[in-house]
Image (cartoon, helix red, strand yellow):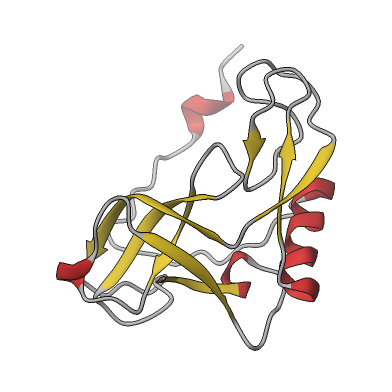
Length: 152
C-alpha cells in the first residue's frame, strides 16, 4: 500500500504573507482583558503552592503545575527589567518606529509583561526605570488597552 504523502507535491512560497487570525483566550485571559477594558485594572493569578503571581494570568503554575485560581490585583506601576528598541517598520507593529518594547515587572507580580514603552527618548531608557501603565481611551478588550508604559 502506498503512502498518500508520496503523491503530494511540495509547494514553496518565497515571499511574505500576512495571516490575520483570532483565537479564544479562555476564561483566564477573558477575565484579564475584561478588567483592562472595563475597569483599567491589571489582575494576575497567584499559585497556592509557591505563591508566585503571574501577569498575564495563567490557569496553572509554570513551576509546580498547581491550579492558580486565586485572583490578585496588581499595581499599574512597575520596573523595566529589559528593553529593546526597533528602528524598522513592519506591517504588524502598532505604531511607526522607533518602537521600544520592554519587559515590565509590575509591582505585586513575580514575572514580567512584554509591552510598549513610550514617553522617553531612547537614550534615557534604563534597566531599573520605574514606569506606569497608560490606558487607551478606546479600549477593546486586548493587551493594547494598555496603550503603553511611561516613565514615572
